[in-house]
Length: 99
Image (cartoon, rainbow, N blue to C red; front, side, top):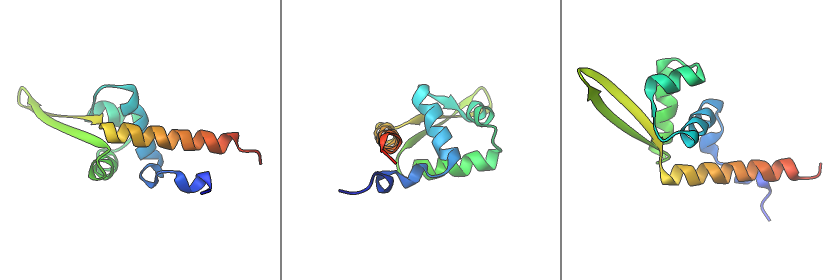
């Protein structure tokens, strides 16, 4: 049987991506600015990590205008929610293992 550590999802290796998914799992949709403030990130840092999660299909991006201002919101896709749940389950397995 494969050791649990090898079942962790590499998409969530970075703390920012882990944080993004945690926030999106707890909310139906989060704006770029709210996500940036919640995780205390720069625009570029957040944008690059969200792009990585979008590339693997874990995050959906919705861009629209509110008045004349651009408004970008993010949601976790169904695939992303499942992948994150699996990742958390694997972490729980690691925590329960006798050392």
